[in-house]
Each structure stands twice: as C-alpha cells, then as structure tokens.
Length: 112
Length: 114
Image (cartoon, rainbow over all chains, first blue to last red; front, side, top):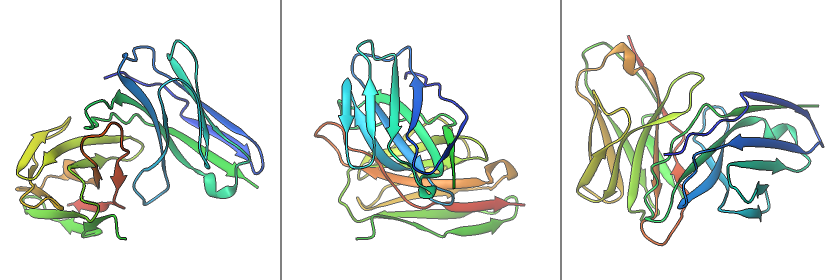
C-alpha cells in the first residue's frame, strides 16, 4: 500500500481557495487517489476520488499530474464550515474492496 | 435513510470487562469495516468483512473479535478490555463489486477503559 505524506496543518480565511497537496511517490498502477473529510465527533466523509488528470465535483477539485506521484485537493472559496481534517489515501479499487490506509491527515483551520 | 448506525455512542468500562459494539447499515453493502482512531492519529483498520459470514484481520486486530452473522450487521467484541483500547471506534461499509465505491462511516463509539 502506497504511503502518503501531507502537511500536518494549514490555515486560511473565508473566501480563499485552499490547496492541499499529498505526496505518494510509490503509487501503483492500479491505485486510485481518494480524499476524505472529517469533522470533530464524526466519521470521515468521502469528498472526491480520481486516477489521473483533473476531477471536479460540487465540493472540490482534484488535480493529478501525469506521473501521479502527488495530488492536490482544491477547495474553492472556503467557509468556516470547511474547518476539518482532510485525509489523502491511495489504494487499489479494482476489486471493490478497499483496504484504505489513513495517515494523520491535514488539519485545516478557516478563520473569519 | 440512516446509513451506518453505531451503538452505543459512549461507554466507560473497567479493565477486564467485556462488551460488544454494534454496527448496522441499511444500504445493502457487501463490505464492512471496523477502525479505531486515537488522538491526533488517522484511522487504523481492526477487522473487516467482505460478506455475510466472513471476517478478516486488518492492521491492528489483537484483542478484538468480530462477527458478521447478518449482512447488515457487523459486531466488534472486546473480550477483556485493556486501557490501551481506549479509543474512538468507527464502523464503515461499502458496496461490493463494480469498481470504486467510497466507504460510508458511522459517527463513532467513544470507549474509555479505566
């Protein structure tokens, strides 16, 4: 399972764009990149998932360069409610079973 | 639609006591998982199940047992609780085959062992 490295914490202000980069140098060919969000006293919640290039949904965008050794989660115009811990995970999703490995995540603090 | 429900939400045990944590999902998912999360750390997989009647060990299985007698339920048991098992326990579920499907998590059980 590929190990991921991401910043321990980040600070931002409301209305700004936040980019959280994750490094995964040993990503395998069959691995997908997935991001989860966790609020205090809640379980993680799926945000976005991708394999290569760019993926966008109503919440975030995920940028993956050609070599796939890193990825960047982009949160447009953050609000106070985006304060949470964000986890980057990589894993082989081909079989449907997901043996996910959660690191320590990035703690994002959004201030007024 | 309840999703993944964990029971109880909080519990305090004495060392050596036993207890069972219940996880129920109403999404007809094949796969279910139990994680623990310690302060300042990510989630670590304890046990998982790929279908009714099957279970397997995850990253940190020692001291825990699980059962999946019904597809919708996944039970986590502590036979003899130890202070090192003080943690927040999360259950998750995901669909089976069909490529990637994200895991759905419950809101956790906070367990303290004195």
